[in-house]
Length: 123
Image (cartoon, rainbow, N blue to C red; front, top):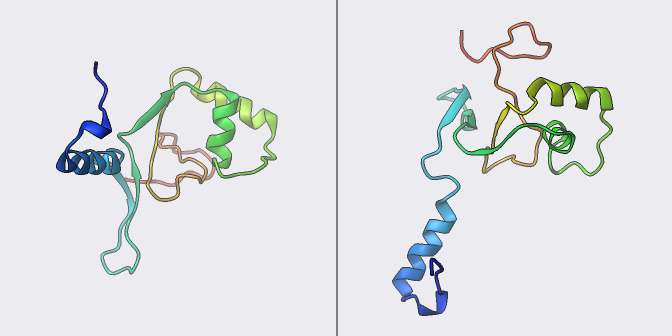
């Protein structure tokens, strides 16, 4: 009960299921636009902000977030990792972007104006 048997589906039902599976990760994405130039050959830079993947931070996730999941070996300072974990603790909410560049290090959207390396998104 509650399972789909692919061999029992009609061809149009299989097609619908394939389309659903293909687009389930991008349907109704909410984007935070970081930059836009209507005359630029490349599309705008934006972050997907409505696909939560977890709440809370641990050292393993901090390493993936700071290095990117495609990083083979990270050489991060353990003190930096612990500070990052402590900054978010069990409260931080994390979202999966994509579909491009998902293996790169994550981005932090915050309200700390004086944070080193921070870039203002909106005045």
